[in-house]
Amino acid sequence: MTLMISLVSTSVLAAGCHSSLSRRSEPTILEVIDQDWGTVCSTEKHLALRVYASGRTERDVYTGPCWPRLSKIFSSYRLRDSQLDTDQLNQLKTALNQLHWSTAKDAYPQYVIERDSGVFETINFEVGGTPRSVSLVNPEPTDPRNKANYPPALINLLLQITEVRRRLDAIETQSAP
Image (cartoon, rainbow, N blue to C red):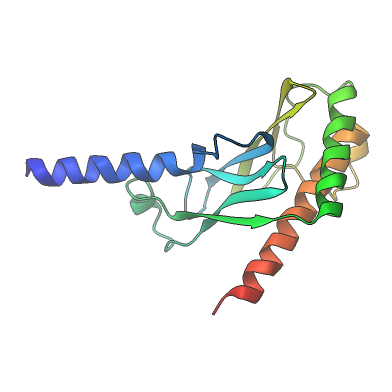
């Protein structure tokens, strides 16, 4: 019995910590952490995207079955990595720089109401050695109401993040067996 409790505890620790590990030798320029809520398969915090200065990316991809109770014990995410091309990386760096110098707040209230689920999103980034963090609820980068709720630099960054994630999804789909 003690061995089983120990094994489960170790698995939980390993599962819960894999997302926060980063390549220590390479600076991170962007990290997006999401936590879904409501009627979803998992309410774990997960790494939606991490981008290193070299363009290397990491992100958690949901691979588990939709059994919310089991996801509280065993992680349903697997860390995947990829590489941005130079153009994508430069566009992302420009968007980060623009947001850093804008008058963006650290948190934005929810304005998109989802019926039965949603996402808390935290965007962490660093520009010129200065760390910044922006928290959002249910960000919808293409929603026309954004102009009234988010500054243009934040909308641009959200669109860049969405595009990077879309391209990474496409690459992953092509390479799947």
